[in-house]
Image (cartoon, rainbow over all chains, first blue to last red; front, side, top):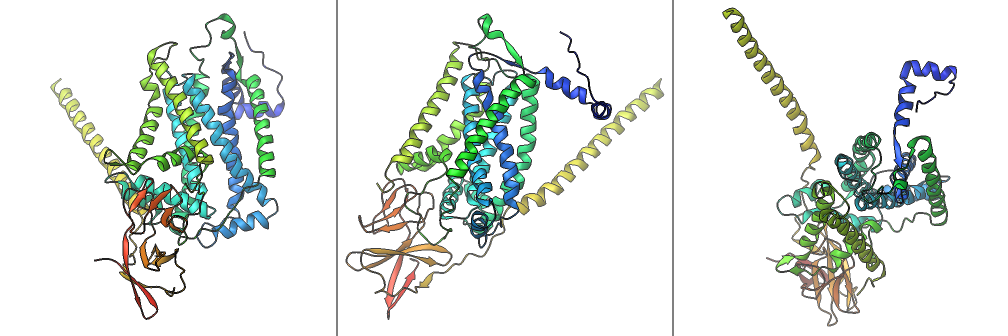
Length: 366
Length: 153
């Protein structure tokens, strides 16, 4: 069906002649979104993107008052929270939106995994998505230190000690991350630089690639959908799906505003490297399953240090996840590798939920 | 004919030389950027305080029996414990598991790490939980109302 171009104004025609607006419109019209019983899960990628944009905007605002040094960081955030008008709101939005973004990203990741969206020709989309997940966790980890409070200080001590367990390169990696032997003001400025410049620069490139690939290949129709005629339907991405996306974004914004207003971000006590770790210390929820695993592992398993095996296990899960398109090459319904892939995804979800639950409910002193 | 072939061969030779020349230059340029960059990212080694002896500001009687106190041993944290018999002991306060700072728990007479629930007894031995090694123990001497802590050996 030939698309009938609507009447355009003078400005549109002027711009079209100079930057080719009609070409862009053609690109936007090209993508179709499949309609089937799993269409719902398509909304989480866009939602992650929306929350990322909120992170960029609120992050830039926080930069105007934040001071990245051990002597001033905590105080500058106190200043933002108590003196700057709506400072509490901007920081709470940044902190809550970070959590919601990670959550939306996990939903997006696991739905892509369970619906086998990584299969040919979308391997690069999966790989770039894996890269973005790594970057997001990096954003979370480096951003957590910036308030320079007790929780942040110990989370960073533990987090930067973990790569230190690796043989040979471990101590070097730890020093590189910390900017010295210990977690000090040098670590804070280093994390600040990583959080506000290095990660955003890399994320912009990879996010651009990811979005380009999604536009190029369109959304994947899961192998389980589309057998009967009803599930072969689709709708144009622009404007049909995009408007639905906006409704999702509005819901996310509503939730975000409510969380930020009713549960503003806390600051806690200033970090003191000569105080014991506080009782009940916890990392962010998305690191909780790993934290709890390290807590429950015994000191030695078959003569090997438990923490080393734990870290090795996390690494292995990460590698399997990243390599999924190549382990399950042609996902088809009922094929054994696809069943294994789905089983792996489900097992990972169940394990993480259980350990996270334990992390929040087990007595911290027993 | 022969002339053409010679000039072709000569061309190929020149092309090969130019390719080699350009890629070497590009490689050299890359290294001249990458080397200083990587050296810049590695933090310089700062002189560590190698204190082998520390005289504490705490007096022996300031600390009650069955309590503990963190102190600075050079640039690293250490813990001073007075056990139920009034004996003073000192250890490195850095947990051997993942480097959190430990504390003394009077309810179970253990040195304990809040991060991953690691337990050490009052000889510094790792007795429960994930820590793989004992805490480093220091020697405590009381001289004229002053506590002096030394590294062993």
